[in-house]
Image 1 (tube, helix red, strand yellow):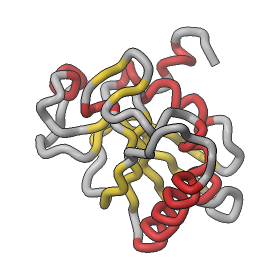
Image 2: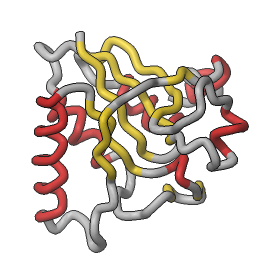
Image 3: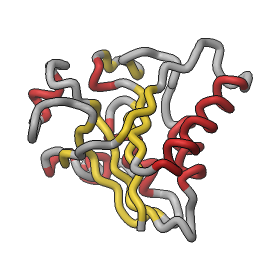
Length: 152
């Protein structure tokens, strides 16, 4: 099993999307890319911790590749809006790929270049590609949020 970590705005929607992919064994929502240890949702929402709302995807690379997950990532949000997704505004909603290995870094750079060169986006892509340092799992009420609300 491998892990991939993505920030694409509010983590509830992208969590639900990644859960539907064959080869994905688990998805957890949480926080990455900041300086504070063990941040809470309330702290992250202030925009002062430096964290992004993210999903940590556990996947079987023999069933789904990191490149396949990148395609889902690009389709799940607008990578051209800086620190914003829909009505959600702040650095915690930034578009980000947190790579776990040199191979993921290389794949992310290629994928980003391909997206930038395509005619899929009217504006420049602002997605950051950053080394994964630490994932902090969000509070339990955020996990599988849409399922808990009766939305799949």
